[in-house]
Image 1 (tube, rainbow, N blue to C red):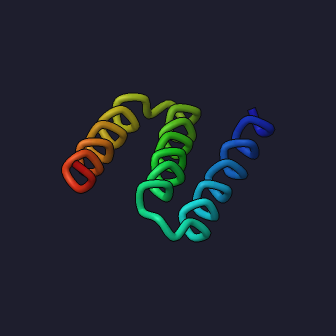
Image 2 (tube, one colour):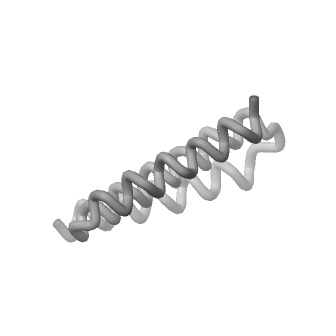
Image 3 (cartoon, rainbow, N blue to C red):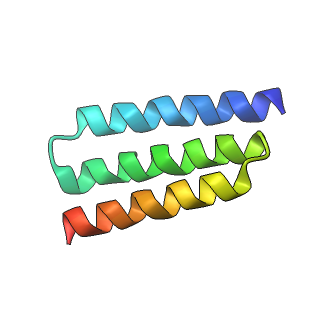
Length: 68
């Protein structure tokens, strides 16, 4: 499980780098969604599945409102 959590942390950092290095907001959103998905996976690995599902749905709802 430590390798899984380490993999999630690396993916989270790479998602943040994808947001920071992309000047277009439409392509930067891919990094934000990836970071959110990885963070929710990290919460699931700690046993907080309901909290991560609510966090992911609220986050994606906010992104839908902003970018539509």
